[in-house]
Image (cartoon, rainbow, N blue to C red):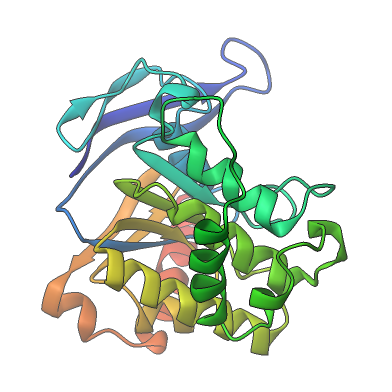
Length: 259
């Protein structure tokens, strides 16, 4: 479903600030796979998501989503295939618009544009049902503007918006990192439920080792723009936090020895 082949990306090429962000990254995820991406700061995790989303063109390699080569497609053209939830709860929403208006924009994004009444009773009822499952009281706040919600509520709305329109691929960029522990777990639980119910293929970046261990069928560890570790299926299910920490420690030791 997601096929990445030899992705390469350099920022500020030919200058003293040149930095290799992606260095020959290849990955093949089947439909319905849930891949968790971990790594230290600067490892290339968010750059990988940005490349898949089309935020910038890659210098080398190819990207295919659901059998379609999207390597040269801009982000707006990939919008019907790829959806994303960002770390900042405000990034994926329009702060001055209501919850209902934000959900409507997300729904219409994947449909042909026509002049018609959008905020129908049927839509509002469907949104109430979707929001009630999250357990954050959002079903009663459809007419409140996004900027009046808590961080967790905003992120929950972003999640519902992201899966509206049935994207083929869901990108989660540390989407619980800015939340308090209790709210983070609620949003994470809602995320797992949505991915399972809609049979989405997902790529999630996280620094939370517990989330990395508990969720997903594929684990990807990155370092210096490369894939350092790839675990899938039963191999991934048997790993613990201590194992991941040991892998990080081993990586740091090898860097020190090479310096």
